[in-house]
Image: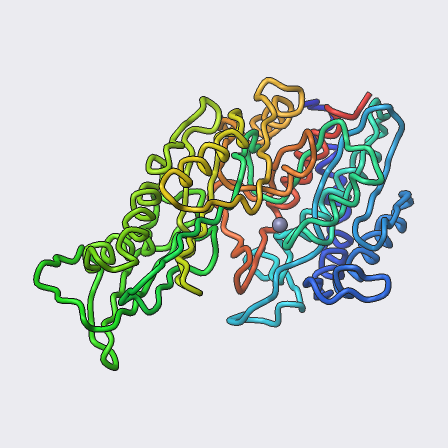
Amino acid sequence: MDQRLDPIFRDYFASRRDDILRDIFALVSIRSVKGEPAPGAPVGVGPARALDKMLEICRREGLSAENIDNLVGEVSYGEGSESVGVLAHLDVVPEGSGWSHPPYEPYLADNGLLYGRGVADNKGPCVISLYALLAFQAAGLNTRRAIKLIFGTDEESGSSCVKRYLEVRPAPTMAFSPDAGFPAVYAEKHIAQVRLEAAINGQTVLRSLSAGTAANVVPPTGEARLSATVPLEHVTLPENVSISQDNGDMLLSARGAPAHASTPWLGKNAAVLLLGALGDVLERDDAAYQPVHTLFSLCAQWDGQGLGIDCADEVSDRLTMNLGKLAFEDGKLTALLDLRLPVTLDAQRILDSLVARAADEGIRAGVLSLSPGLYVPKDSELVSTLMDMYRQATGSDEDALAIGGGTYARLLPCAVAYGVTFPGENTNCHMADECQSYDNLVRAGVIFAHVLAQLAGE
Ligand SMILES: [Zn+2]
């Protein structure tokens, strides 16, 4: 980092403290949860108002700010055939319940934390990236690459904002998204959802079956209901599965432990437990016997071995699979899978072989979605600069991260997640009492100003 710039950037942030706080509060006061489309508000009135406010703040600072279809905003600064982008978002998830103070009446507490829905995810970072640009300007730096601040309004559900941006604007040459944590995330696995379907033709004692609510969560519980004609002498139920009587039916209940689908080894999958137990309980001549056994053998292992797709790469490590939802409806057994595929491997080929393998076993597999992963090499100008600035500012010796999760950054062709939370920091993201340390926000802002100076400064 340029040591001469450091005090300039710090002083600039200190001199604008009141404005930074006022701007964050103004944005957090707007409930920008996705809503029904309205005229001039394609993802709801709240997100459109938050975008208007953000762009008004940018114009107040003398910057040229453009509103693209009330969906995404752009501040363009300086000249250059290449550009450096900063991608953040103004929409928030619903507030939920359990707040100590009203979620849309933000404040700075005595402990130095800002409270309110969106202070961390992601309005605080939106404001701080603006002030990083203003600090760059205040230092009298010229641009060799243009700087683009991009403010989305639909990150939390669908990201139509960035998709629209890329339809009407060239992608930034390189970008970072302060919508996660430090250090930088240089690799994210491909993410796919696959539905498996097995028809049950004939007589079965299975009446209902359900486990899980979403593909991306390891199911913590599951339950199967059987008409009570099954003799149980030959059955030894696994641990965490219990059996009980209910209205003349037999209930099989599995208890696991939840985890995010990208880290299935941290949880215990109740859907898998339930399938295994059900396979033991059902008689051979039951029509559900074979489909249940087959599904279990395909899905039991979180590394995809059962489907013959276990694999790994140097960058992002092993493939992971989560059986996120299990159901029995209309005579069909269905399983929803969340797959995280090594980023340097060909996702389509892996999915093709999954579909073929399932078909061999009489199971229909359909790929519901595939979100390509992200990989920007560690020695690229972008990642090496981000990591250098972070290490020099913090004295840390951390390495850039590869993750199984997906961030906002993957939507741009050459972008990585970077900040603003520091290791060990908790912001109650997406929960009640969302908070953000003001001092750490400013620390991140100073780092961003250095990054802009390195990547975009002359
Ligand atoms: Zn976010």
